[in-house]
Length: 353
Image 1 (spheres, rainbow, N blue to C red):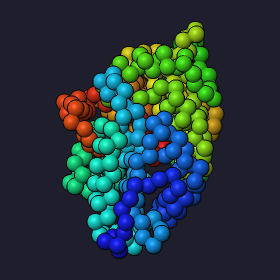
Image 2: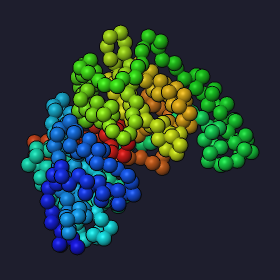
Image 3: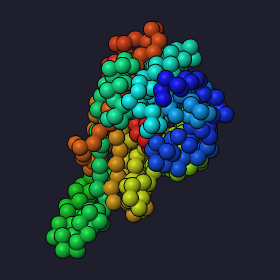
Image 4: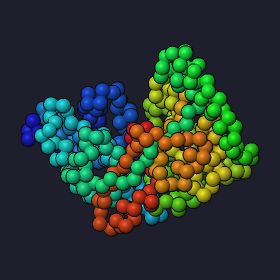
């Protein structure tokens, strides 16, 4: 029971037990290699996890993933709240709140200034009412249908419906896409397997456009996407001459890999030429991969969001992500932190993608 549990800070030797609990709670097959990549080898090299142990087994966890944050053009230590889990036999006994408060107190001693997360419905109220997180801005789901006939065929499993509805919709999309502005030919977009300091020149410019965002220098992009051991991400850079002007991260997923996800999108928001070229490239790339739709969550208040609409994306109102934020250290300005217009987050800033 929860009052028989020992609450303690996790060390790397608990990795296997934590993974075992994760697979039991979430019915997944995560392995120790993924856990070590995420929690041991991240760019901060900090481990911030509180566990509940009973009879030599981990029965609960509250974990933070430390990450460097761009805060008002200053590199500070922040964290994402992820992988909260309680063994089913130990739920509804206050263990989640007890673990969370211990972990959040430890985060202060680790110098973690702010914390954000994307809670599920079951844990949302606990974060807001008991842990002093606040709801922030919506990140709507944006969708672009690139193969309407195949999508309708899969959803209806009817040749008649596909012919009656799919063909006219396909004609409409072809006509619509014909009039979408095409990017300039002198922009080169290439796949990369590892980034270096050339990309950091771009990041040093991009970070000036946002007061609060994840610190996405080359070491972060390499770790988060290119060195991920069990999820395949494709990273592309857009160049003009010798200069890197933008970056996009793509991933196939969904049923039979028929959904293309734009996981991350980095460029100066005023550089619409590059941003638009990357978007059109992504749509064409996913067409070649036989995807039916392309999806992305983005903050509605950003210029990039509006550019997605221009490229033929539409908002799917039933689904959106809403990050929560917690101020953890006093010197952080609430005026900056809690003004949603200061933030830029992408799907890749969540552990869901």
